[in-house]
Length: 137
Ligand SMILES: [Zn+2]
Image (cartoon, rainbow, N blue to C red):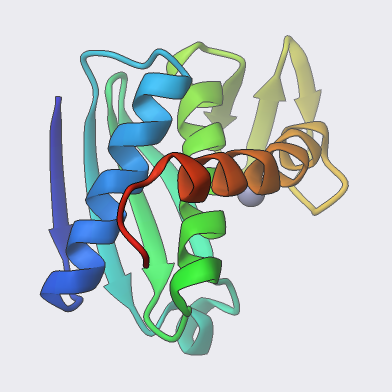
């Protein structure tokens, strides 16, 4: 397992790494590589977080640099649910279309089933991370 984080302070880099490691344990993800890029994602893409599958076991998570600590934790938990969906083969990008649990969808929006799962679980895991964490973020 390898996590590479670019574009933010040492403190936030440490937080991001801990949330990702926590989520990998919770979701039982092994043998995967994650690149994290913190940038002006919201200005450029109108999103606070984004996850894409680079390769079968390699993923890119992009995060907006204006997120505060709580938002950062929730957003990483959300994107890690997508990593799980990709890693287990539930979610597959087919050009601009998306294959989810063997159904083909034209596009992605907040009410898509894979987004629903991520939104439903991000708060649960974010709260669990904060209460399991010994550090005050
Ligand atoms: Zn999402």
